[in-house]
Length: 128
Image 1 (cartoon, one colour):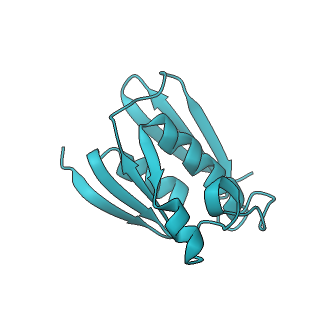
Image 2 (image 1 turned 30 degrees about the horizontal axis):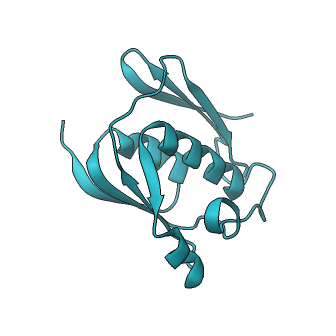
């Protein structure tokens, strides 16, 4: 499997983080563009209702689960940046059967179901 040391996520952060995580080794840096501003150390829930804030919540949950840690958050807040930086500290895998479901009403199909199986990561898209 190929690996990378830097990823830039921009449009579909939840799906991109899920896929790119499979190629990230310890020390990989991930820059996530267009995160909200006041929650989780500098992001907000201004979109609510299954929009960007819901994506942010899920991305944060599974990055933490896979051994990533946010860095440079205070700097991003100080310069009013919508980007957040993460570093992979350890290679961690969630418990087999762990599931994340994310609804984003700003895309079609609007629902992504992510699951960690014995074979690794899987996901499928659906419209709700």
